[in-house]
Image 1 (cartoon, rainbow over the protein chains, first blue to last red):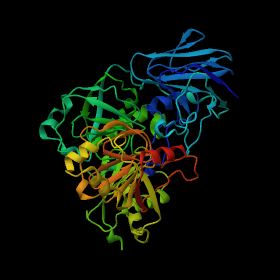
Image 2: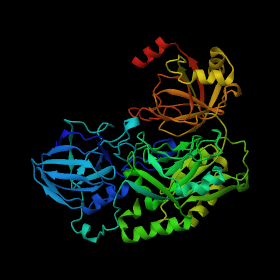
Image 3: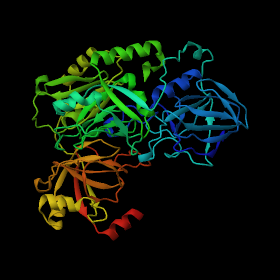
Image 4: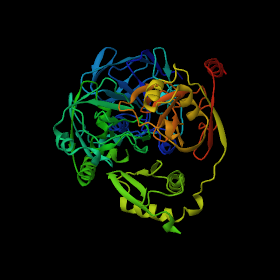
Length: 312
Length: 228
């Protein structure tokens, strides 16, 4: 059942769900949508399980032909969505007929969008997830990104017709090219010099071109860190901010390593963790340090007004 | 018996708990690996990542109570004693080519150790290693102890990419990068052997507590093995 036929691939389009759980002890990264809140919302608005596979587009989305009538929805970075050349809104379920040409345009702000289908995308399951992890060629479509000429098949899903009405979407972030990311102190925060600790909230960082789903490399005035490269490798998670001796922090993404040896100076708070997937090269970023208690409360408040994220 | 492994649990973010031993020096190098297996078997709703001197647990702060989780972890430590042991399980030989093409940091290693090329290779190659930990990327293994004579810190500027099979050194460890990806260790050689293969029933070729021996090969042997 070749339901989706790709006419163009976009820059980097992959199949993702919410990630591969409970294998990080073996070095297998979480993977999954880089902006899990947007992926979850796309599924939820279709009345589906939030962990259902979606298509993650990066910078510029794909163009494809549908060979079956299908309900679709696009959430995340604003990329123009066109059906047979006609622009249609985001965050809205749209029925597209068999034979329609669907095109996802260029992101103006933000980096990634998530396209969900009423029926389930069939991907390669590996250790309980179809998330694509390109470095090891896991999951997705043969472990790789979508290419022109590829086909994807769909299978029936159990969706609930009435589900989407219960969801409030106004808590969704709006994007620009400047970001304020809330963080808590990491276990090696105290390796930062006193002056770097003082300056951190005023420092502006630029997202490096060498950023991807593994990590967002930042450029700014270097942090002074008492780092001799001799730390014992320690557990890392998406949202951990590492600081090598060069003083330029790296924000770990969904495909990040599970262990690392550079000091963990911060952890991005859950309330802002999904934004990591929307950072793009040249964006400006600042950190705001908050307490653990504030981080807990902010996440609880967000989940109260946007309950589908409770399970992310 | 519980007191054999007194632990402390710290909250390192709103969803992460770090477990460390109160006594830094213990004679059980596989303690955190074995404890993580124990937690994963007992609790199906926690993510656990072991390191060599700590482990970190990720939980869902909205659906799980951190105080309860801490209590459970303190209870689990009481039932672990019999699982912790130092016995090695199995042995594997890994071929390595130390040619300049693969040993990206050989010059840096020579400059910083004052050794000759063949001395560096001898120090790295002719030694029995233990697999201390698995992690970083799927199938990456941490091997120790590396010779003091070629001990170097991590790179100040980690590389965004090294090739699959690259072999790095940092501090008292050497490790094998099973896939292409970022790397902060000095690269000393490359193996043609595939350490992580999802086509195998068990994709992980090497696990903690195994013995590992490197065997030097030439470039043409490397190429022949790649074709196999």
